[in-house]
Length: 390
Image 1 (tube, rainbow, N blue to C red):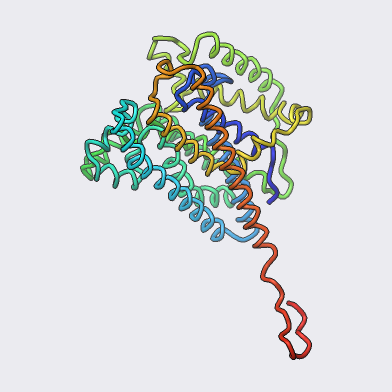
Image 2 (image 1 turned 135 degrees about the horizontal axis):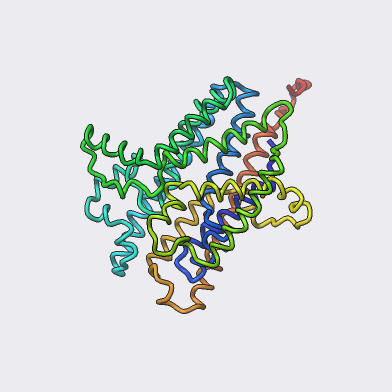
């Protein structure tokens, strides 16, 4: 399948925004959620699901559902290996550095692990205990494991039932479905991991974003896919909503209603709350409607494309970089000079770009080896004419 450079560039942009947001520098707050009350995480999950729908939907059409299911599971296993490696890095290297320096940011990050090392390790490997920053990949793995059945049902029987069930789960999540499932699990199994240590993201809310992206990507594998188009009234509504939220975000800050916690919940990131979802839909409509024309006029940004083409290694590398910065410099950027912020940001992106370039080069080398096949056999000295190559 030919790579879509514009999707790689968008994923690269999401990785850049996530890195800037997670690094404890003075850029974190002003550049966090720059397009409104929507973070890079929403864009990254939606784009990842879209790519998965395209790639694995095409595989299901060409090779069958079983081949698609096996490919999904292999990818999930690869992501799990990355998550396990990052988790072990946090519990060994980062924990050792943080404890030796007596860094509060690290001790807060792994407080449950420090209190219960072995249960935390086992629960982390079972995708139950999810320390801050390390809670996106476990959710991604669960979505990947469920996707073969979702995609198979969508390709065979249509997407209406799938989207209706997904939307229903999102609605229930707004009223405490995640807490109810946790409480029921504790009652049945005696699970000792506290609820707040099971990850900030509400899986039942964010699955809607994944299913939406999966459907959108799978729709591109049809024989004659219709372009995504919106009625004029939808575009006319989306533009002012997107602009208003972006101006609101930069005029007021990342808390839209300041100290009013109840109203702020309407934009809650972890629950993917209703107003946040509305802002995301508005941005999506604007991007799909005006993005192609803008893309034809803008120069291609090869650095972003490279980052996006190696999204999984770059994402894991960004976690390693952020954890190292937290361990050595702490979470408060006001405690170190501005020049150190600049140095940290420059060194971080240099490391991420190096990881991306190396990954792309290795992937290209592997692809070339697979397509070239084994070298032709040479004729031994004194032997008769060789057989024609197969």
